[in-house]
Amino acid sequence: MKFEIDKQKDKTIFRLESKSLDHSIAAELKTELVFLQKEVENQFVIDLRDVMKCDSSGLSVLLLSERLEREKGKKLIIKNVNPAVRNLMEIARLDRLFDMK
Image (tube, rainbow, N blue to C red; front, side, top):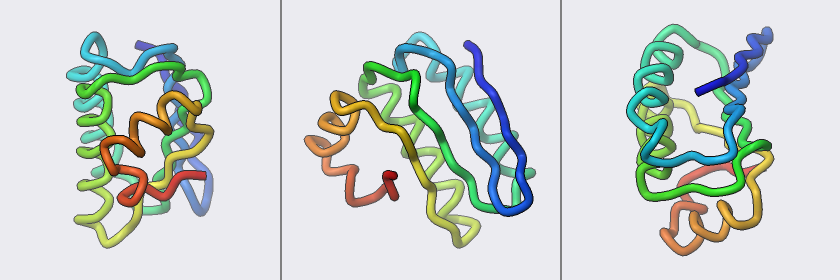
């Protein structure tokens, strides 16, 4: 699993460099996000520009990340969401939970 982290003054952007957000990377990604989000105090953003497909395990990663931000009193931002992934989020009614840009 490859990713890039861009720490800026007002936000931290986590860019997943994978075509799929699915069961094959979910456990490893959850671990990375837990450690990263515990140390980040500014706005956390997940950039999904490279992700073309997602399954329920991938959605569970995003839900965990959202919960971690909510516990800090912040809202998770997800940007550059592929139409197929956005459609899955809408079907699961998660589009209301995430701030998608």
